[in-house]
Image 1: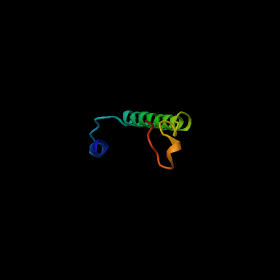
Image 2 (image 1 turned 90 degrees about the horizontal axis):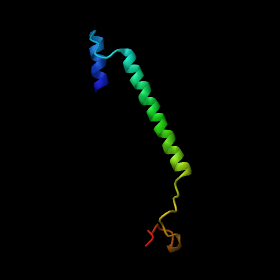
Image 3 (image 1 turned 45 degrees about the vertical axis):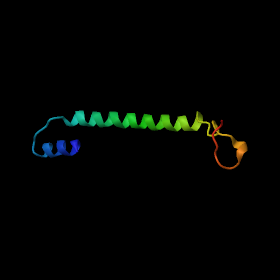
Image 4 (image 1 turned 180 degrees about the horizontal axis):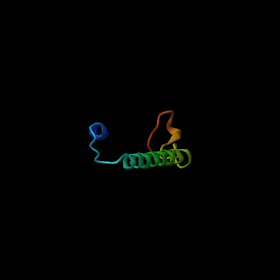
Length: 66
């Protein structure tokens, strides 16, 4: 909504934020999003143990350890 509003104001010649600032903000958000995706992939690929916390000797269904 905010981006649409800024674009509409730009069409009418009113610039609240420069195009350079908008592009830098978008690039920053893209870098942060990419970093977050990489961290999530690394976390689930290397540091998660799917068998932790469950007793596999009680059958095919997942049962919490007691």
